[in-house]
Length: 301
Length: 288
Image (tube, rainbow over all chains, first blue to last red; front, top):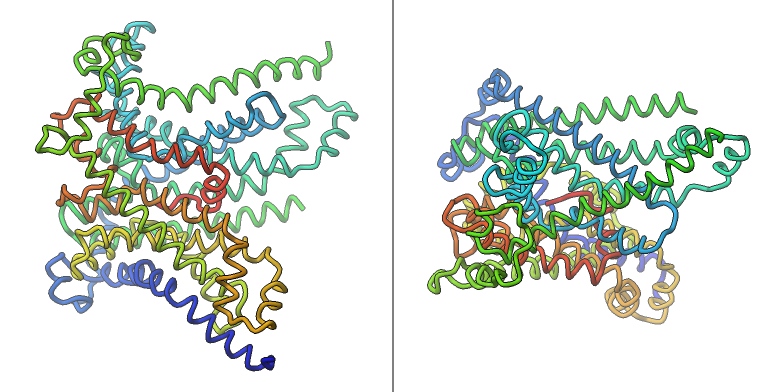
């Protein structure tokens, strides 16, 4: 029988052997790129410079000065914040309403719940395409319905004029992401003990009072976590907005700006600087958020 | 009537309204997609409100056109689907192959740096894809992996690994270690124990991890766009659909058929393994 000491030593050896491959991949494709982004953001690098000199380009703060002094950047940040807050709030509210409606059993609850998750699991390219066609002023069903049946004077160019474009993108993302909130909040609701609610009813609470004073406070920790998750996801969102509007009509969020700097003007340094500023901004927002919710939790206690 | 009774009644009606509205909102866009894929483009342009084609006007020509290769006058979705399937299957297989041993090591073996690596996987997952995209794009170009399906597979593995390890780790932590220890005492080596005991016990979770990676890889768009835009022969379904819809020459109803082809595998997978996928997606927030 192996002595404990030997088994500890082989444990360590086997452990490192088993974990190395995955660590190498994550290191090479995620950690190194993040560090490299930081380095590139301090270099005035075009693609050709990177190909020729690798990491060794002259260091400069130019990218940051030009990113931070560009009005376009601040407009993009503002759009990003508006978009993030809109879809986060919207998807959580709709997800909460859905979770409450599905709380008690009814016929077909399980299959309908599965159906409600479709917007979230379906390929984003397919669903954005369907929305584009449905909202098209010439051949979309929404505008046809609006002009022929609701009596709109003319079709609405939902995705090509401000401010409807941003609102439409937000609506799309509420549609796509409310199932995410629905899964989370549904699970949280199942976990609540019914005794508190029954006691409130015995004490004469109306259903709304029961929701407001008994159910909602118990869901707050889940909602806070969900809001955090959704904000981080929305802040970094690229696909949905790019596919719906391409960043036109005042919908250029920060990640689309990075993409345009990277591919349009192949300004790698600028793209990296924008991405780095985004990450710093997001990090600061996270710290503030955690402080605030931490204080909120203390007060609640 | 008391306030409580009024509210109860109103809420009972409201609940039905909410359920019907939500189901309609989720299902209608998909119904529209399927229906338009059988409509002739001239019918759509004549009457956009007529979403469901008359029986004698239904066409499957859209599917033939979108699937056929360019030489046969089609748009090459057959090839796009093959590319997507290759990439997604490879990403799913390799992710699983990498993650099972890693999760095993993280839950069973004590070694230096174990906690740090666990934390690293979690932290990685907060970083925006677009930040990673810039240097990965540049680096892969320099290494010559930039415009290849292999480069894409590597990127997808990295995208799905953190969540997959997390899922597997949670599951393995629930299998009592005493089972492994008994095997080790009986003279089985670590690797043998993992292969013979742990993996069979964790098989359902391993399957859901694989399905999750497949789905993320099949649906992914940004990296495909960055890596493969200039190489139409390597386009995935997502990229092909986007590129073709940017131009005006392909009829929208034909592209609707393309959207159905893009969505169908995911819906089928989801129908077979709903719980497994939901678990992964809830854990996985949204990478890709």
